[in-house]
Amino acid sequence: MLLKFRKPWELKESQLTEESVYLNRRNFMKQAALGSAVLSTGLVTGCDEPSAEVTAPAKKAATETNIDPSAKYYPAKRNDTYKLDRDLSFEELATTYNNFYEFGSSKNIHEKAQALPLRPWSVAIDGMVEKEMQLDIDDLFAKIEFEERLYRHRCVEAWSMAVPWTGFPLKKLVELARPLSSAKYIRMETFNLPDIASGQKAHWYPWPYIEGLTIEEASHDLAFIATGIYGKPMPKQNGAPLRLVTPWKYGFKSTKSIVKFTFTDKRPVSFWEEIQGSEYGFWANVNPDVPHARWSQATEQPLGKSERVPTLLFNGYAEEVADLYKDIKDERLYT
Ligand SMILES: Nc1nc2c(c(=O)[nH]1)N[C@H]1C(S)=C(S)[C@@H](COP(=O)(O)O)O[C@H]1N2
Ligand SMILES: [Mo]
Image: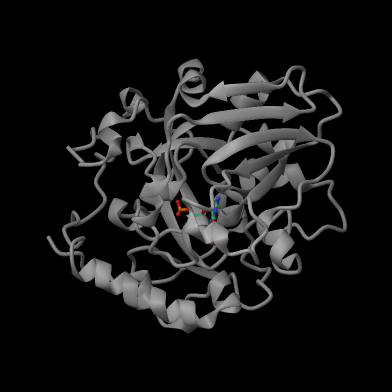
């Protein structure tokens, strides 16, 4: 069946803002051209609507998914605590329309990202913890039970998606790490492999990608470490083998392909904050009433839909997370 919807890259530039437009306006045109080329060739074979069967085992995808040692954990049981108010996005879109600057500033990096080696992969837990650790990813996965959750995702560029993530609450990793009481933040670091991820040769970016949360945020049940999506191990372009998911914050907080969790008493300066702190702050909570410096955040473009929809306070998770911020004064909570 044909995909009937308008693709995000067919939107006018004025409707779809993005960080890289600011840095290099011509990238947008290149990316728009690439995007439509991809959809008009191989990929127009999607199903008609996102089905309830997103957790069905992967068909024989001729990818590393078949030999991924974590494939046995999928599909995981769905945790129904968090409900969606909208359709799931098409898997074909969520896995081909990506932000992963390590592989370039266009959305169309999914093929380049296949160069990332996922094994061996080790995750360091260090800083203010009882005992620093270096964990093999498969040993870590074996310790923690996976579940599936349906979450909204809102990019600061004003596109959004709704996807089934598989993984585990970040608080389980915090418990495993046993932070000292002096630790106030977790700093998360992505790989730094410029020979493999050519975007990391762009020396004007402060590689590696860094993100951070307060321990309180990280211990909130909504904060999730995703290891898979659509009932399968995470595709490389979506941040395999493990990425953060904080659905009440702008998408850039959800850092991909993490290699290190550092517990610290210093607030981490994140990647986008370092580049342009006036526009991308530490907190970055979604709020439709607080515009980005260069565009409104009042509405968003869901991937694969023709109509924009209103953006919700804390991306619809206000009831769960608003209390985390009630005592914080004089801070830019929403940019
Ligand atoms: N390491 C790393 N993590 C990242 C990014 C990135 O460029 N590098 N982009 C962020 C942004 S801006 C968004 S919107 C989401 C996109 O995730 P997706 O490609 O799975 O939709 O990843 C976030 N995590
Ligand atoms: Mo984003």
